[in-house]
Length: 337
Ligand code: SAM
Ligand code: SF4
Image (cartoon, rainbow, N blue to C red; front, side, top):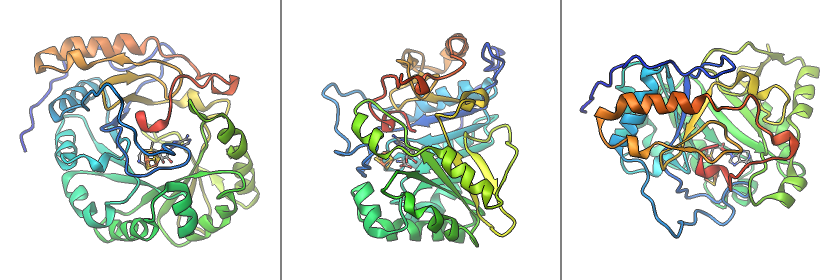
């Protein structure tokens, strides 16, 4: 695999005006998904009228190269469903080979995991987050629109077999839908090295009624955990947004992702790039900065890094979700959650 070194050209590190430094890039490699999760793409992926291609392998190498030269150490591949890309392995290999990149993480719905996880590992995927919204196959089907519960579960087993020591499992807990499974999920990880992460339902563009009906505050779950003797763990520099709890009687851990919590943004260490090459400073509330014109050749690295730095200076201290300003995101599949 050809790896073209992209040198640190000496532009600033990715520090914003609130002195937050960005080590972590979430890169969406496709908007396409084969699932129809009720909270994300309830009608499945709908190709837009005006078609625009997703980032090519070379464009991905250039964009991640620029981030790496400015201090990014961890890249998370997301989507849509990132593993639907035919060149998925080449993407992982290319990013892993870039100077400065220490971790390549993947967020997946897990439908290919049983078959492909060994190849992912060899290519350089250092950690995996897989979404499992229910431990009941029928409920799994009704939330995701796909009858693939057993396939995803086998994928998790296979990941352990090929050498992953820990797997993170994402679940969006919704009121009166799958929230009754909270204890069941906890029991499931009692003797497994799984970090079970409950993501609070986030309100997106076309979701008013759904959100009002199903949103469940993560704070309620946090209180429950503390009462049961779970202990909140300290965060590491490149850790994601989850508050992670551990318990002496459990091998697994519980993570809570609570974007509506007051101080959620204070520890933000993430920037996002969409599959069409737009830089998003925050998951919510802004249009994105187009980078594609600077991904045409390796010679544009200096100016690309300058644009990244300049754009970052416009990052707000907080998102405005709690004030009911949910921004313009139609769904999270277009930017990777
Ligand atoms: N398809 C992959 C998957 O499902 O893991 C990766 C992309 S998906 C957009 C990334 C994460 O975002 C998933 O864990 C999903 O549950 C979460 N997500 C999507 N829409 C959401 C919403 N409205 N609120 C909270 N989480 C959401
Ligand atoms: Fe697809 Fe992931 Fe969205 Fe579900 S959450 S529809 S798997 S992109």
